[in-house]
Image (cartoon, rainbow, N blue to C red; front, side):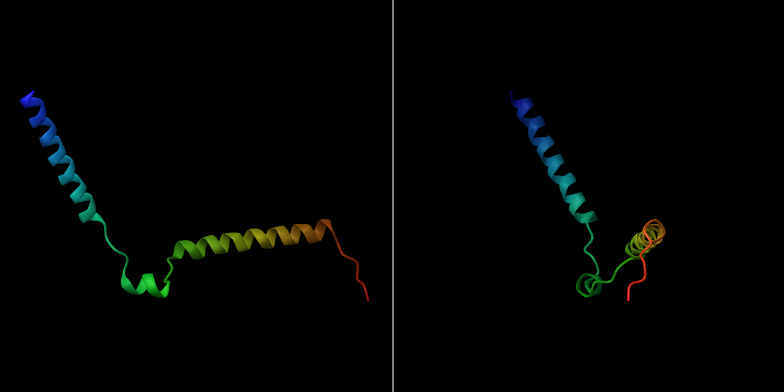
Amino acid sequence: MRSFSTICFLALILAISMCSYGEAAYRKPPFNGSIFGKRNSLEYDNAKAITAMCEIALEACQSWFPQGESK
């Protein structure tokens, strides 16, 4: 029974030490980026893709459903 409790204690110490390594690898975002909202290029690429899809849909809808001129 004593060897089992020793093994559990060592496993607990090992788990705690591994958790501390995970916290050490965590890096906080830069101060200026977190406050002033700097964005990376991925967000701009997504916006460009959505804009392109909207333009394509708009052109397709205009050709399918032409609107007559009203005065």
